[in-house]
Length: 541
Image (cartoon, rainbow, N blue to C red; front, side, top):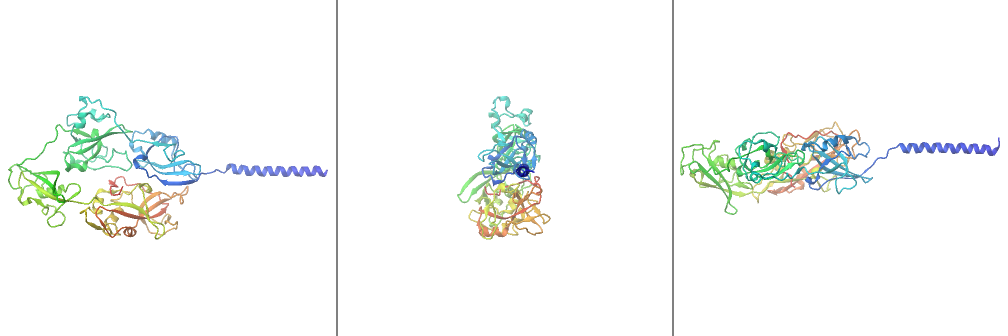
């Protein structure tokens, strides 16, 4: 064979082989999917009310940024599109974290108010405004202007159908009217109890009272009004006409009220009643707050001794003073410097209880007390000596741990004199009352215990062995999460580090720094205990 021909054949075969190999390599590279990477992931720190959003159905909700490897769909675009027009405020959303990928895409972590959906959704290309699959959303709107006709004014004790269906702003007459709760009870439907905000219009903001029965005779004035955007129903903010009923102040559906036929008048009768006034001993001035005790007997006369008489609840004047308590911000002075006795016998009163007569005014001495002691959340440094850093509500899976009102009252320093102190270990130490309340499922709505049947790592990434850790789930830990096993931060309260972070004794009304140790676990979180009537009023804002 001609040598030149042979050389040409060999060269052609080599060239074809190279092309084949190159083609195979290019095919392999083309089939390998390129995933995005997160370059920033942080909590949103703007005012929580500015982070109310609504989905729009243009993007799905994922377990992580949708372009990350292992991202799984939590809710499809079709599902979110349907939710966007829901007529229930339970389907409002709150954004609480933001992440940016190396492709410049922004993702927000959001949660529906009812907790049904939680995950990451595409939010555009900028962190300055919500875009993409979500948009800013006003959960309440101003009601439409009132026609202010006389026919709009209610004047009877029964709730009319027009009042139940009213969505426009209140008329002048309605604003001036005095109201009662039409049907007192425990129903959580917006008509029987009051709320810190109209129900489901702010994330994790619930009821003020859980039973309105004690306020069946209380009367209220309306101080504000709004409508829920999704339902379009009219809500009003009510304030008791008698400060003794102020614990019920809050928001309620307008349809849940009934108008009182007349403005309440004083029930003071000199033949049957005693007026209770309060004097601030620090200024010597008498406060504007007063109460009235009235006997259930019909045979008494002005000037007669009140000794041995009781009111309709069976309370003597002394027991009534104890039951009413001091006006907000004050504490009743006692003659023996001890806590006020249940029968009020050691209250500092002028004239004395023994000399009280019908028609008279008893003046009770009170002293200003410090505001409620509150707390700040911190996470300990990963190594000894490293400074603790602040924990925000959005660092926790369910927000700051919420505690029942009774737990807050009994487990925290009770105010006390403005120049008084409390011992930190009594409340926040290993056996402190607050420590026990925080870690108790009967008073803390999101506390959980995780066990060694799943992986647990400390703040340095080292696996730990423990029989159980009691604490609070945080947000996801991307460094430990896999597509099949998501991992979460887990915060455990450390009373020893808390004592070290605060003085041994602190002034009443101080803010205490609570220190937590951070772990990571692939344990699946339980849902928050929504049946527990709890709030975060004890957290310093």
